[in-house]
Image (cartoon, rainbow, N blue to C red; front, top):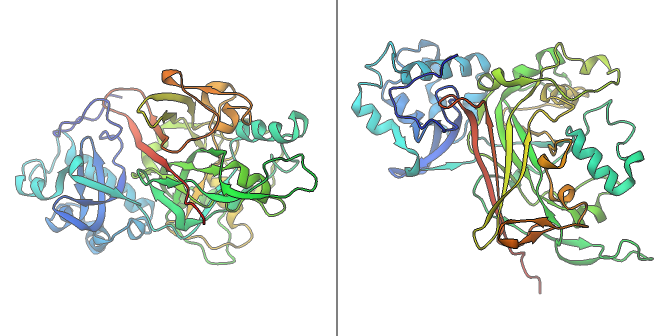
Amino acid sequence: MAPLKSWLSIPQDSHFSLSNIPFGTITSKNSQTEKRPAVAIGDHVLDLQAFASGDGFSALPSVHSHLSVFSQPTLNAFAALGQPIHREVRAYLQELLSENTSHPQILKDNLSLQKSALLPKHETKTHLPMQIGDYTDFYAGVNHAFNAGSLFRGPANALQPNYYHIPIGYHGRASTVVVSGTPIRRPNGQLLLDPTSDPKIPTFGPSRRLDIELELGCLLCKSNPMGDPVPIKDAEKSIFGFVLMNDWSARDIQAWEYVPLGPFNGKNFGTTISAWVVLFDAIQPYRAPKLPNETELLPYLVEGREDTVYDIQLEVDLTTPDGATTTISRGSGKNLVWSFPQMIAHHSVGGCAMQPGDLLGSGTISSKDDSGLGSLLEMSSGGKKEIMLAGMDVRKFLKDGDTITIRGVCGGEPGALVGFGECVGTIESAIVFP
């Protein structure tokens, strides 16, 4: 299928082609304090509050009673309208922006509305797209699970007996989920410097093994009452869209604290997500089969199809404080053994109430080979070998001033890319305790 063509100039390599139409939250040069919804299109941003105020939705009657959602500081109210409305709004905006739009008077020929609503992206600032009430991180990347488990327990015991039966997850800290570009402060915590010591006595200080986790995030749009599970056949309807995610990890703090209740301070100091939410519909052409799972699943986790993950091309760059950049990972979002619908079905099966804006993390996504590993823990074999960087620099784990940039995009045809933009964070020095 030929790329959709727009009357608006869109770079051929833009992640935000007419095939995409991702949603986010912005402030702008002409309104620096009022956050409001927007969509990204090429090098521009369509301010949906200004667009709605200027009768931009005049030819879409189904949203006339919902226009107030475009004056909210987050996307939660829009998301809560459900996938049918998301689908209509996205298709409507695609039609208005298309070269042969049937409504040129609304935007294409309306210079006044263009001036107020169609803003250069460089004159806008993105914010956390949704108010995230709850955040749960899963462990669906089996290659990472095997690699990490092998480092700690050996290959024979790398995966726990429950791994292929249940989407493993834990509840994270929603208050420190931040938008791309937000600095990440190195955490302090308890560290066991010599794991072989007896007795084991921790010290306190900045994490020495600060790491990344390459993940996908799924943002929800539906609620279910407490006590009412979401059936697997309906779970996809709960998905608003997807973001890139870096679940920063302090491996040394985590190693000392995680038995018996799992990660805590080693994971709760920061999670970065990309600013633009790629809607559920936009990513459907890129469905792919999950990684094989030969285990007979319990009925509540059985999906009607196998292509429930997505072929998203993922890259991770590490930029050192002197500005040298190295691409340290190239992988794919299809390297998952559990899908987000399965995660939703499992998360709610005991009666957990979920809400619009809840965030689910896929868990670290790694390829089978070394080219697409999703953590420095794996790349450095647990800190035993150095990762070579540009300029003859090396890393085992992150240093202060390092910047991590994650990119993700679907498709390869110029002018038709469906991408996420970037998920960026820079490490700041830890607080010095007296």
